[in-house]
Structures are given as C-alpha cells and as structure tokens.
Image 1 (cartoon, rainbow, N blue to C red):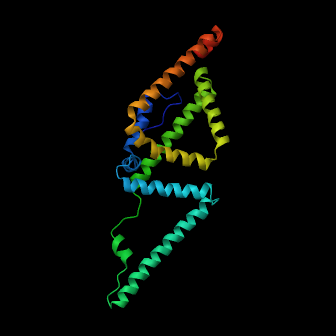
Image 2 (tube, one colour; image 1 turned 90 degrees about the vertical axis):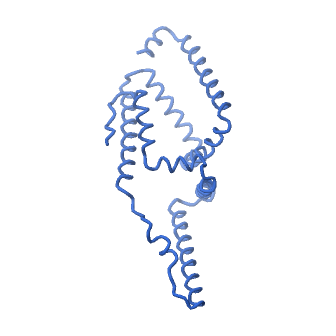
Image 3 (cartoon, rainbow, N blue to C red; image 1 turned 120 degrees about the horizontal axis):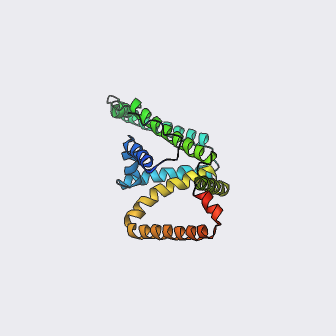
Length: 224
C-alpha cells in the first residue's frame, strides 16, 4: 500500500489522522508501545537503565558516540569470549564433547531485517518529509498570516530550546519523558486532563484578549 504524497497545503485533521494510522500500522509500534507503557516492567526497566547509562556517559562522561559504541561492542565481545571459553574449559575438565553455547542458542534465530520493515519505515519518513515540506511551503508563501506566525513562534521556541540544551540533551530528555509520562498519566489521568484543559482554556482567553486589542486592519490580516 502507498500513502501517497500530501499536497502542498496545510495539513487537515483528516491528514493528521492518516499520520496516526501510519504510526499505528508500523511493525515496530506494538513493540515500542509495550516498552514505553511498562507492560513488562523488567524489560522496560532494563531498556530505561541502558538509555540512562548511555546518555549519562555521552553528556557527563564526555564520551563520543563512536567511542561509546565501540566500548559496548568490545564489552560484548569480551563477555562472549568468556562464556564460550568457560564452557570449553568445563567440557574439557569433565571430558565431555564441547558445544558452543552461543551458537546452539541462537542458531535458529534470524538476524536479517525483513524488506517490509524497511519499507514501512521509508513510508513514515517520506510522509514526515512531505508534511514538513507542505508546512514550510504554506509558511513561506504566506498563504495565511496567522499560520505563518504560528510557524514563526514554533521556530523561535525551537531556537530558544536549542540555545539552552544541546542536541544530545534534548534527545535524552525526550526519551526520559516517553518512559515517564505513560505510567504517570495512567495513574493521574483525571488530574492531568483537567490541568491540560484548564491551561488550554486560559491560553485561549489570553489569545482572545490580545486579539480584541488589535486594530481592525490587523484583525483582517490575521483572518485572511
């Protein structure tokens, strides 16, 4: 199936729902969702600990990504060597036939990536690129002054965040939020929904006050 390219216009609600459909149909969606929602606390905790360790070493340990990745592979190689040689020594001591434990445990496992998995990721990437292109097109051509101002506000906010935090820190904070928010929301759903609703209502009230104070020409310009 093909999702096609979105037209060079601002995305509608229907197209945003289409994006949600693409995410939900992704082969990795259920796996990632299970980890982020802590359906298996042991596995989610292990992944969360690995992510924290990895980024702590990157941010505060002053390791580069390549160096840290090389150390991880080196540690795995050493661990595998210890396991295999340990089994071999024990087999020799007991005068038994040696069987490589790693090969016997993973010989039936497939480590190939299915083409369908790559295709689904490419579909998602293509849609995001087209969505971004459509948004920037509408902003640059000033199709709607209010829409262009919204894009400008988002860019200024992104600039401020990028000035305060490094790219690595932003990625790390985003991953931590993805792990922490689902269980917190599950236990505090009503309070969070009420807070979000109240905040949205307040922002609308402030926007209306600012809008009412604008001169008529400015209002007409924003309504174009």
